Image (spheres, rainbow, N blue to C red):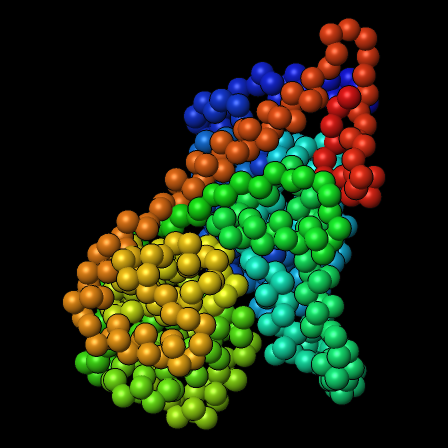
Length: 475
């Protein structure tokens, strides 16, 4: 065992390989462990894909480990798919149950693994890291406690919470639906959020480093330690994510003509159709009398299992004629056409950590109306300078929306200044590459063999190392 680790340490310190026809110094084999990957498209998928592409150019082979998807293309290069139980549509979370993929993980000579979730993909990342004695870097992409709270409130049936609808027999699912989660567990919401905070903190503590998008997100993660009883210091790095600039669409189209829209201001929402994204709040706000007094159309770009519910909500609020449910758009450049056609982007979410859609809007000179206190957008936008922030109150949001819509010159001026918010994916990925090198160098410095004699691998003895070592260090 000692010789294996000694040879590996020497190889990591000195190797220089050729990859894709180019010489790559300090080459590393990295893996991105995600809960979703193409053909599904969301913010996390885009971040992981941009990191992977940059790693392939700068470091060497970069793998993706993700759940199965029926529409996944055959013969994907360096993509390992594993089977799990479905959880919250369209995602497939839960316990990874694929022993075949576990065997494949053991055959890849990882130098570092990057977990983009603490759930099934994150657990596989820890397993892969432990097999090879390498560090785990963990990206915190979501305010998981707020996400869990929202899911708990809108899915008060056990069958929905555990995703049983997708895989149980209908009769069994119906019986589970008869159990009201809220009434059965009066303190359930608090219990769920505390459990999520505890597990997220413990996963972070098992990682060599945690990447967050904002300082507010860092502070929130540190507050989880009080719930988890954590005393071990963890390394947290703030790396603001980037976006890909939109390219012109070869066969352009007119958004108004496509959807039969009148010549009125177009409001735009881009994101998953889910309560935690603030969609009920948004629909209620634009149904306020003062908001409805101004002519507009709301384009809702995205999809989700509750789409029919939101369409019904729009009808009940009397704004169905003002809302256009566009559906999901997987082509990023086509999405850019919608940004360019819009007068204002609406971002009512409190769970966003990156506010990538605000940056996408800024790249075409479109300003954003977000919520004051939401970590991602509040740290990105200066109210009245590079965007607009409203209090998280329906009436206040409607009032701010109406004021912004009435002042075209203000929107144009703020939209132009918002362009300074844009950061490219390559800039963000370059920061991550430097972090990878630093983390690996730190591990290598602790893994250096003594000047003479023999040594063997053993885990560092920290309070939680025995229970869940994220990586092995040589001593």
